[in-house]
Image 1 (cartoon, rainbow, N blue to C red):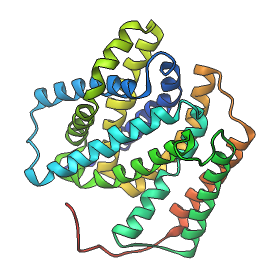
Image 2: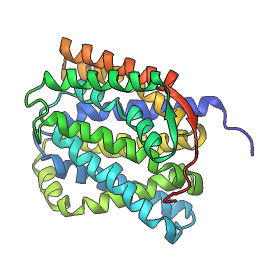
Image 3: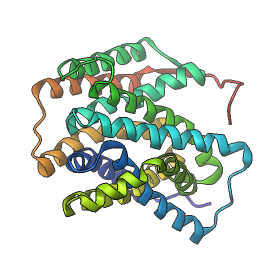
Image 4: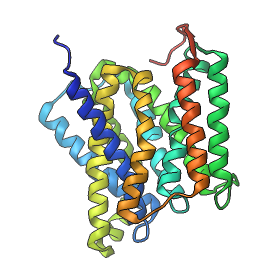
Length: 300
């Protein structure tokens, strides 16, 4: 098999980063006219329709029964739970602040590998971890509600945790079925789990402005369908650990897009905390990994 040209990997990574970065401000554009969970249902209903069309056209092998539970878990955690927390959190958290908090996801993925996959961190790794978490605390404590139960910031932290789990859990599926097939099934599972809110989504869209409808279409096509597919494609080639470092680009890209799309200007506290978060993630990923010991037990 010939190696994939590096330009394809770069283009796929750029598509994923730009698509996902656009989700932060565009969700805030749509939220005033459509509720948080119905918005997620509408977005992923469209994404699932595109994914189903792709599956019917290409007809890839149906997943083996042993992998059904993993697909359900990936759809539930990476799509349904993530987007319920994300949309609800962004009702009170700015696009830039949300992206900076979620930028801790690569660090969380590393910690998952430490506790579940036998990977070890050096002293620098733990220093980087504590640095990142202190940066998240700086951002969160400067927001309305802070770390109180159910606050927007806490919900966005839940997004970061969900994203880290999803990034790690889907890797085995991508190896077996390929990036696009894995993503298609995960999107469909996530959309089906959001189906109880489809009637509210249809009703909300019927009464919404053209701007909100366009926002939902963009969210369904780019961040949901194309963004996840491009990300899964890059993970399948580069691996989850190497790919996670590309998420450094999400916060600055989001801040720029949010400024042009919504006029949002990040606070000094958000920027300072974000700089601390990114420094900690860099330290952990660059100097923190020590050794790797495969764990015998596996849910694959």
